Length: 438
Image 1 (cartoon, helix red, strand yellow):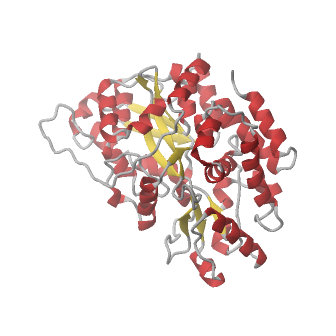
Image 2: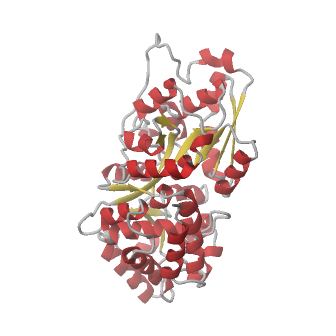
Image 3: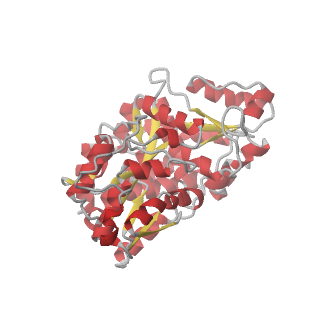
């Protein structure tokens, strides 16, 4: 049943969907409205003393930012919201659901996983659907609308086509921000020739080890082959071991495998936690770290961001044909338990109030078009929103759109096999192809 639903859903998004980010604020001041906002404590009598549990893949700074966003909501409604996270979420959520002990709300890091668990997810009631429709572009909701039912609320947007760097190191060495994809590759060559290590890379992430490499492959796919091949790849119109796909995978591995190009060596990236991988930028041990906007939450709290700070980030340039082509991703909140207080939390998650309350947290971008962007913590984060809005075209993370067994399974395993040297790209990608559900 889940596979059949995935095929129908996959066909619906075959063309790929763009993210929309509008810098506008929204406030509902209609005191006569039938529904109350989270700032109106009128609902507190109904929910006082209730608890809603949320489980996702976010940990540490990102998890705390999410928890903090509920402070006013809990005070206003009386609902205690308990959020937990684990990097092994993809494994644990299935175990919890199958064992009959699911969280009230799951935060799925892939819309493909929402589809995989569609039979277990509660369809959203009309008031939540209305809130979603008012605040999100259909490009988000189409990904999690299954058999006519909306199964998730877009929670956060990820801008993945970014490269973190040290402005001080760039200035000291005379490096300039690359304007084209070829310039980016040439810059890495220059750094290595200067005796500097171009990249810090880590793909370790507990049970999710391997996923950071999938982002590299996706970014390179968009730039080397374009959006049409990218779409054909994730929808399985071409096989995973198609020559174009293998060529892109080999381009990534060949870059990483050059002597002195990766801090610690390519053979150690699977053992390097992704959360720690970019930190050597602060010591000048590497020059660049390709990772999404959310990585800012992994730097020390006192890190200064921006052109005058310790760390800054630039857009990974697109191709000559598509200079602004952009890779994105995002998380979705889905209800697994049908109780009034759970749906009240889901409604809040869909509101501008939630997005604005979470906006100050490091590593967060909201897909809510009515978020108050002035609440983002710094100009750098605001610029990320602008990059996302200006992306043309924008493509959602391919592995997140593939069947879960592939995009969050064999593709990750292939990354480990390739980087540890146990398999070459073609062999590993052929095994991924063989794992694709019928």
